[in-house]
Length: 430
Image (cartoon, rainbow, N blue to C red; front, side, top):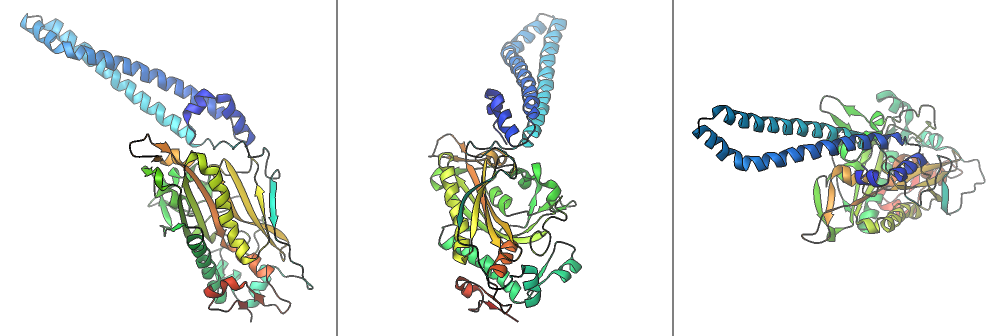
């Protein structure tokens, strides 16, 4: 959620930044119109309350004296005036609460403002920040992962669709072990090398939690929802990790807090029908390792660069070529001010595949979830900056590993770093 004080002081700036990401700037005027009314109502109510407070100090003795003097009608008139003032304050308080709720509802659906280093433009206006590694060359025609997996019998796409539906897959035998091993490998890397604290979170979250992380503002159509209990299946572990500290004041001396969690993720992928849907390219349930940081505001962009490196360390360890894209303002997520995507190259499918998105949301989510910190005991609380990054998503990583490390005989020889997680045998073969 944006700070309403920014809308009051710099409405044109906010509108310009919203336009840069394709959002409707009219919402700013709507908020400010309600805010003007809210402030007027609050001022009137506070003025009447002050008058009521002042008169209440003298009204008791005054009414008593009037009654003693036999002036009951005048005493009743004083009482009526006080009741009228009290009733008016109650009406104004109700109106102020209603206006405040309307303001919050409008603010909730206004996206974050792009950072000054986020380029303007749409989906195709990204900047390639760097490319790492060389694309593989083969003396045979490389196969796509869906053919490799079928030939090796490690993923069953047909039965996955049978037991659940389109967009769901079954990992089998060594394929299931590979998936499980990759999760353990990545979590271990982030804990042991990067110093993250691991959490095992619920896979279902309350509406309050999904609202706190701002996911309800944009992603509700894509989330799986249990209406009876009003619980949402995780689209990623990010909202679970963020809401650990919802409505809390952190000790600023503990920042940055660095959290990592594995979770299955569920997404309807609304509007994605027919787009890159073959194999593991776009599925409704997948596994992902997620990293979240809570930082001081002044250090969050430096922490973002470190976070990005933590994610790409996974790919470096696995020997996969990748590229880092700085997304344009019209392509960043709802809560983000700046976002990098990390893509790996799948030679069989001949595609660059996104496996990580690294975002700095600044204090946008912290305002919505009321996550603050004190720099020292007794200091005024400030909103933390919150960052998130995939570390990394599994389906496209598995797809790329199979395609990148395929051999002429149809086998796949995976990197040695995975040996401890695959019982010492990194060769997948019939």
